[in-house]
Length: 412
Image (cartoon, rainbow, N blue to C red; front, side, top):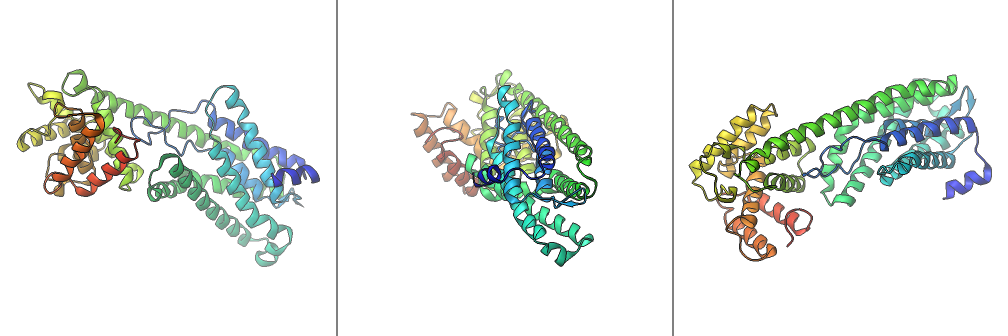
């Protein structure tokens, strides 16, 4: 509000630059929201990733304007408050078309962009306008190094904000969310920072005409991300359809694989697994019962926990062999075929699938007794009593923590 009032009182300085960068931000925001692809799975069972789709065009435009010190060889007259005003106004303008078309919008993404652009402007504009930056670093390669270092620090701040926002929305542990954000910085984040630096340096010498030219690579990045997200969504739907084979054949209850996958992913989040490991965990949980297709007679309610250990291991090995023929990563097949081993010999993903599968069978199978809350408590108690031999106690406690939130699985 202070920035808006100040800009209204003093007027927009160098309106052509503000309009050019504002249009870039607005177009990038509109492209991000309109006709967005299916989100990559972030919570199991098709829950969208809370981090949302990136907006490289809007982010590069905002950062480029924040780091703009000269325009066509002349000193730029805008400051920090005008940067905030332009970014806010342009981001809101970019949301008009998606709202008119009924597309979902994410105000959290806009707030992050405003805060990161303001941070970059505060670190650059006062030093540049007072001449201290030129006195310290001159006009050579040192100023380029300063811009790149400032953009790297700004990207770190944006990652911190993105992880905090996702934590507030989902309740997932902050550490893994921040780690996933930091892991994504060398990809789209590096392209955004490099384009913003080139944009600010080029406009300082050549004027505004290079702005649309520099926007083309970011549009290609946006298009590539959407293609990638669409392929990932289709791939997951294919795996989910294959996992339903046991349900269609009557070997497992309807929705069992989806429930195990969602709850397993939540437990994996609670234990701090990274996004690639969570994807492997989800795929393995979806296909963990595929080996039951080898049974002549279905197990009642698909509950394999009461079966002899040798039979459980045979089903798991057959399931792993089937999964290896589907083209999914080998790590998924490894988790499926190891879920019947002693838990101390299993990888963490197999321990999670085993505990979650046993829990779902106990609360919904023929052995379940009483109301849903009572059955859940009894199921957790049975898992805890079996931690000496069958289940990892750390995984069981993480499962109890997830269920206590009342978000996944059955209520307490």
